[in-house]
Length: 518
Image 1 (cartoon, rainbow, N blue to C red):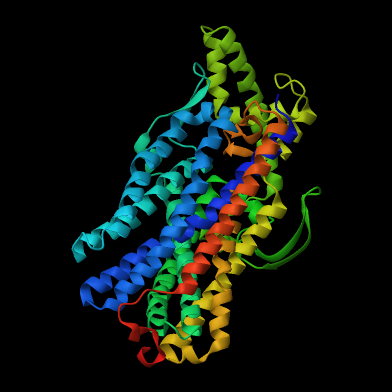
Image 2 (cartoon, rainbow, N blue to C red; image 1 turned 60 degrees about the horizontal axis):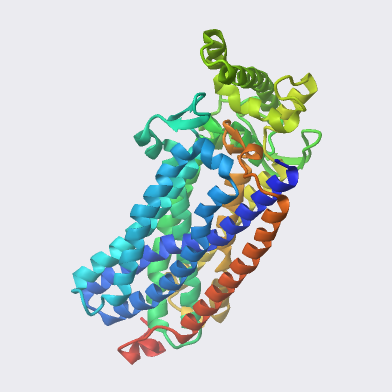
């Protein structure tokens, strides 16, 4: 039996395990390419300092990869244990990219990371460089297939519901792969990972410089990281803008929630610097706004309105009514498969079936809902404004701070050329390491909470996606995962700390001192 406690605990378990796992993913995505860049410079120049850099950052990459894999494997199993109804309903579509990720990208990544560590004396310079490239490629391909699956959850095109099988079925595999939502989501996520890894390398490099033991390696690593961060930030800004356009088109309720936009404004819509949402009254207690900016950001125009939540809820009320018709027709069709009139009635309303399924949670009798129950389902068809709005602002604020950190590092390293004599600046760079991780977590919360109450946008409510478990089972496993994952995080932090404190293993000991810091 589905209960509110079961749904809430299932969501909390998946959210906590995902957020722990997402601590490791962005670093893996970005640092793998920086390791490749460092080794490419080594192959081109023959300077051993770049090989030492490659091995040092490769070691940190390996630690992070190992813990990331350990925390990530369980997520795929959770779809079968905690979300079995979801897996049955959309497994024909969702399972395909996950299977490819496991069979192709994951094994490619895992195989070549082993060769990366064991192949230094077995391959030529160029041969080992190819191994490093394939390691980085595998890491990013793995993320691509995961994000294709997640992109379909946000924009479930290229699929159709089968009343005979009572599940969604794929209609166009390549459409799914090249879905604009999925590809933009992938590009934005990996760019965020690149910035995360770059800020991490900047911070650790600052520590190497601060301790005066590996100044040259620290400064050259930071140079690579700053250039990588600037490229990543440019890509993140571009893909973030494209992502906003996709959300405006395909998830207007998420856009309205992330902007606390309750009323549809005359175009161009203004953008709120800060707001205090009143979710019950569907209004804001306070809203300080910049004229026209939201219209420009969300639509790239000055004459296109941005829908407010009140109008979206009103539209969804009609969709719930149509969905109720589709849901009742579906039940009748299952009882009498040959009834052409019932099939025609279902086909006429099947695009809103997901909204009819909302009534399973909000109506005593989903087949005969009252007007009040339809209104309640429509009201609950949009996400929480408080969480969505402030997670978006947290992400943007943290990204702004990261930009200042990267520009500050570039200013003192490239322009002033006296970074090693700036202990306060070095400390700021070191303590900035958590910023991108927090930004990534805020972005994840925005993307996933902004889709609620849907497991699959407009198709499958989260309430109906869970497994037939007891709340006690899920709660107990949640506590176990919380404990185990916290231990994993502590192990990661300890191993990283030990490796960073030990520093790079240098063949030429002179590269560590300040006399060679050029």
